[in-house]
Image 1 (spheres, rainbow, N blue to C red):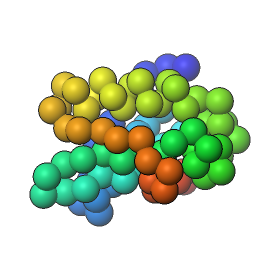
Image 2 (cartoon, rainbow, N blue to C red):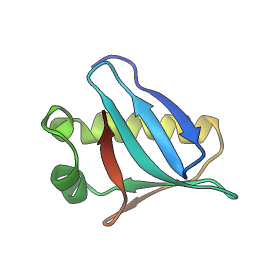
Image 3 (cartoon, helix red, strand yellow):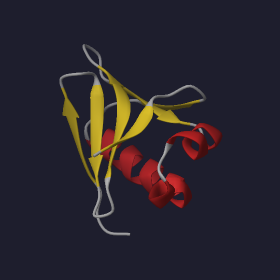
Length: 84
């Protein structure tokens, strides 16, 4: 998988863009915090091209969060969806 780029946007969303597609994650504003979906939630919510990429997206998102000093939590009810 190629590089994934992350950027926050105004609707309390974190946009993750990869060559294969774009996923949107929950990002609280005010005090930033990323809520990343647990693996089962991931399997139920993401498109087919992303189903086997939970670890890749989690690792890259964790790196982005560390660089930007933003906490990240894995939660069972996190919002994630594909943007087309």
